[in-house]
Amino acid sequence: MLIQEREFLKSEGDEWFKRNIHKFAENSPEISILCNWLMPFQKEVQTILEIGSGGGNKLSQMCWQLNSKGHGIDPSNLAVDYANKNYGDKCIFEIGTADSLPSQLEKFDLIHFGFCLYLVSRDRITDCLKQADLLLKPGRFLSIIDFDPQKPHVNEYVHFKGLKSYKDNYYKMFCDLGNYTLVNKYSFSEGNHYFSLDSSVRTSLTLLFKEK
Image 1 (tube, rainbow, N blue to C red):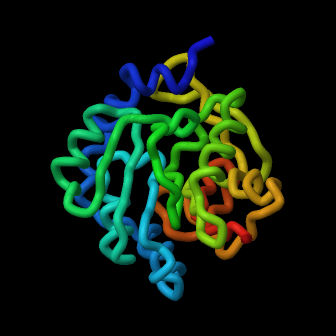
Image 2 (tube, rainbow, N blue to C red):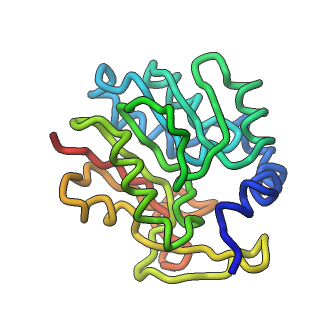
C-alpha cells in the first residue's frame, strides 16, 4: 500500500501545485468569510498556522485581513518556494505534512487546515488531530476547509493511482475530543458558493473554538 504522505512529499505535492498554479494569485471568498467570522476576535488572532498552505495566497489573505503573522506548511517544494517568493512579507512557509509538522513550531492563535485532511492516511489521522491540538492555544480558534459528506466514505484519488480520498466530517473529529465548540459552518461545493444537493461533492468551511 502506498503511503500517502510520502507520495505527496516525493512528487504528487508538486504535481498538485502545477495543476493549480493559476489559482494562487486569487483571493478566496471562503477565506473572506472566515476572516469576517474572526473579526470580533482580531486582537486574539496574532499568529496563524495553515496546514496545506499550497501557493500561500490564502494564508497571506488571512494575515492581511486579520493583521496577523503566518506560518504555512505544505508537502510541495514548488509550492513552498512560490509562497516564500510571493507572500513572504508577513508569512513564512516550509515543507511538512499534516501528520508530521516541524518540531520547532510555537503555539498559534488560529490553525487552519487548507483542504488537506481528506488526503491524510487513516492510520495517521489521530496523530494529525493531536499535533494540531497541541499547537493551538486554549481560548483560540481552529478552522477547516474540506469535504463534508452525508456519510464518511473513501474514493480513489483521481490524480495518482493507488492513493485515496477520505471524505469525512473532520470538524466533528475535533469536537469529539471534548474541548472544541463549533462556532460557524458554511456549506458550498467546487464552483458553487452554496449548499449542494449532491452530498458527494459537498464541502464546508468550519470554525471551532478551543475551550479553556
